[in-house]
Image (cartoon, rainbow, N blue to C red; front, side):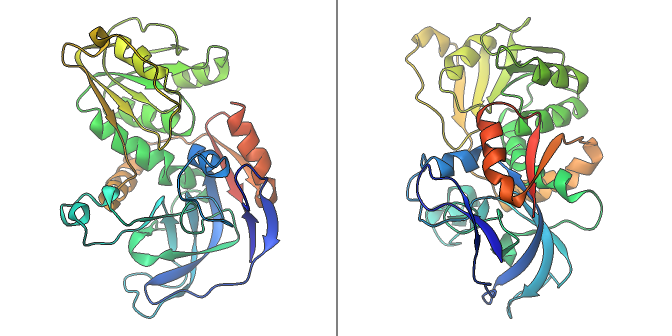
Length: 327
């Protein structure tokens, strides 16, 4: 099999021939047809997450067909199309797993971070953490739903019943969740880099009520805000933008340091929350809802060997929507 392999923090990914792997008893082997490129992949490549083992194959928005199944796998067959998300495995017995909070598992594995992921022609996944996808829809358009969509959905649920919703960062997750929020009847206020007129225009085209720079105040107080950009300085900015009792949800796995801010921004029962990973229930709920919401996923595709170029385009804010690798 071919894979783009990360050998050290900050190193460029290298296209390598990797020995084919057979699935374990509870695993499936997948021929990959598309893998989304997520901002978390940048955090892996840059060594910003703890306990990364090297070499590692990044990528955790995987769509493909099952080529072989382990002896204990049930409910999935060779030829089925499946999606593999960030959550790769949980222990099933820690206090969090026992309480239905597997996203906080004490002993998890994460696809493309602590186990090899989808920047490759094939991958091995735990069958219990793969989602059946059926045969409808384009692989490249579905791939970003498996993290940008799923983590975005979890953050939207955590935002509560907010009618006036701010989205800070309008990339892969922002442009997907804006459409879900509009389908739900919410008003969306999109915040982007000051010079990113393309993203602002996309937000308005997708039904946002307003789009502007992250530093700008919205035209009305927000009920809640979700921060997708990994920029700590957006936390006090979002707190300024939400009303009394409003909620700010930080949706990334990594964020730069949050600067100090006056207590008055938090006072009057404003809340700051974080999203950690996802549960399989999040995936089942969102993937069932996505076709109903009529989500239009904006993608730019790259061949597998151009993974470094895709990551560089994301880092530089040069992508509109999501990047997807096609092995």
